[in-house]
Image 1 (cartoon, rainbow, N blue to C red):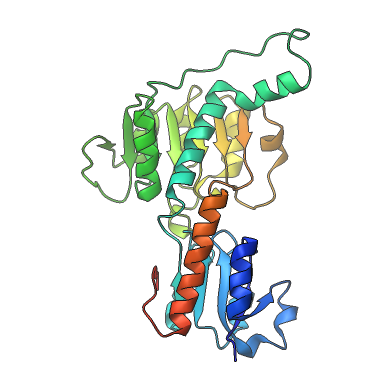
Image 2 (cartoon, helix red, strand yellow):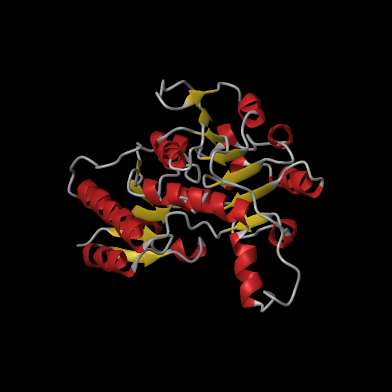
Length: 309
């Protein structure tokens, strides 16, 4: 008899076909849906941003493993998972390049006004309406990175191609040869022209980037977030942009996805993406493949490939 699992967040069709072949897959719609099947659910496949709602976790007494299609664990109650001996896996490494690529893409889009230029041409404004404002040079700008894990280092590596001096802050100094460690976030912001967030989400980093940090970055500074929306105080960001205390922002993630505040959606100094930094065919297939392999290893009583717990 196939193990029964709950699929909370859809995956690539090829990946879902593999799951359907190996398991009895229940596709999540609501907590009420679980009433008659909860006792049989042994595994969950979900996404990093969606995680496992607390009500879902509480309703599954036989849960053994949560396989996350992503690297974020902030949307899963890890404390409870440990207490209940529930394994948790993620998909580290395979999405690093795409997230770093997106960060650089957002930097270029924000400073060079690429979305505005695209709209200007599509709307037939070129040659008919006043020219767009000049952009800002990217090459040589001082880049600060919050969080120097895999993604942070990949962003720093790419920034070198733009001759950007790179500094970073993290919980400790990694003694990286080409990048300067700055222990204080405010100091990092004051000495950066572009500040990129690549830190983990969760309670420890909630609103880490607050009004004080944005003011330190300043009216000629730019904020880019490819990490978690919770790391930025969104209301403080809106106020900083409105008051001209911050030059601009490029965001792939938000505090209450998919809800994005109207002031951010309507601002001409903000570039937005719908949480799609890892959204390439190649990477989503690789991520899904790792989810499949972790689930298979668990149900075969083998060592998990990328266990968090």
